Structure formats: C-alpha cells, structure tokens
Length: 340
Image (tube, rainbow, N blue to C red):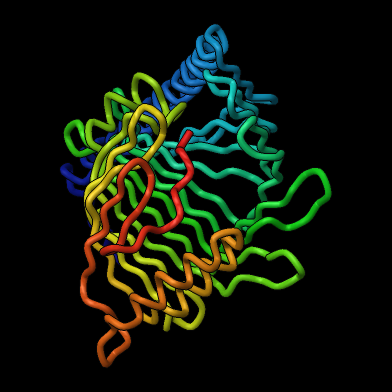
C-alpha cells in the first residue's frame, strides 16, 4: 500500500499567492492597454483638430491649402495623417500644386521626428514656368520639427520626371533627387544631389546624363525663410561650399566654390573659383544649352583648355561675377539672367 505524503502547509499558501500575482499582473496590463488606447485616440483627435486648424489659419492669409479625406492612422505605435488629395497655393500666389496623396507619421517615442510620403503625380503651376506634371516612383520626406524652421529636412525622390501638361512632352528626368536642409544657428545649410539627369533637346537630340552635387550655405537663411519663405531669391547671400557637375561618362567635370550675393534686381555678384576637367567638352555642352551664345562660350572654354595639365584638369581659376556677368581672367561670359 502506497503511503501519500501530506502537502506541506507552505505549498498551500504559495498557490493562492501565485494566482493573485498573475491576476494583478493581468489587471495591470489591462489598465496599461486601456490607458494607451485612450491616450492614442486622444492624441489622434488632437492631431486631426490641429491639422484642420493649421490649414484654416494658412488659408486665412494669402495662401490656400486643403487636405481631402483626412484620415488619422497608425495605432498602436505610430500616429499619422493621410490626405487624398492634398493641394496648396503659396502666400505670394506664385505656386500652386495638387498631389494625389500625402501620408505622414511620427513615432510616439520621438514625436518631433516626422516622416512622410507623397504619391504622384504632382500637378504644379506657376506664373514663372508652364504647367508641369511631376511624377516619380517613390518620394519620401523626413524632418525634425522645430520653430521657426525645421531643424532638419530631407526630400528623397527616385526616377522623377517633369512633363509639360500642355502636350505631354518630357521636359526632364532625374534618376535620383535628394534635397537636405539643416539649421546652423541663424544660417541654413542646403545639400542638393541630382543623379542621371537628362533632358531632351531641340531636334530630338538629348543631353548626356548630368550629375550635380551642391553644398550651399545661406547666410541668415532661418529668419529670412521664416518671415518671407522663398518668394524671392533677391537679397540672399552665402557661400558655395562645393558645387560639382559631372557630364556623361565623367570626363567633363566642373567644380565651383566661393561667396555669392544676389542684389535687389536679382543680379548675382560673387568671387568664386572654378576647376574644370576637359574644358573644351564642357564648352560644347554649354553651347548646346545656350545656342545664342555658342560662339562666346566655346571661345572661352577653348582658352581655358590651355590651362589643363596632364590629367586634363585645370588648377583653380578665379572668377569674378559683377552684375550677373561672370569674367574668367580677361574673358567675359554671357550674362546670368536675373533671379526671381
């Protein structure tokens, strides 16, 4: 006959205690879940209200904006807003646009960092250029919110096309377009990258693919943009830290650096330095872009070709720009049109 041992009194006490701990943990998790859910929907309601208020305030001035079919999404760990479509008209009424959709989101653990995505196409109109339809395979943006301007901003587009709305002809195509801005005290640093940029030419010919890398600083850019936006480039000044243009296979290249300013008439003044690789090839390219000044351009760059050393690259050459007219040594180049 098997003898059973009596349960120890401590075991009988521990079972109810363990059960109470599990129950308490479950209740605590339920409270956290309910509180998180209530908090998320409260923040979603506040976000939608603030979005509508911001759009209304923007539209009270000279500009206009709309966010159709606004939807707040992202539960439980994100918080985002979608608009289908989204439209805008700038304060100066110079630019108007309509995109198929816009989606933005924030991480709840870092609400100042905002990510977004824009769906093509963007119908863009302005008094300064013909109506365009801008398309892309993917267009994303991210920013770190701050006042009066975002601390950082990044726009990244792939396979971007610019098409004339009037006849559907392709104006330009860019394999990748990247724009970044960063606040540096009162100045604004701007980074621009264009890769594999092409544009059809008159007569059916085409430009060789161009790539551009530009790092530019805008003196007092933060207060200027916060007050006036980019309604005009006149009165701006700063530094070209590096501008690098590469054409085709990379034999023809141009480097630019130096200080610049734009006067009240939109004319550029500056003291810059340029370095070229294959100057004659660059001259031929620019002559195709500006056929009315082809002879002057080719003559200037043929002269610069004499400065090229064994690797086909010139040393740094000073360039003076006065009232929009650049001069390389004793050679004057065609005037740069006034900036808006």
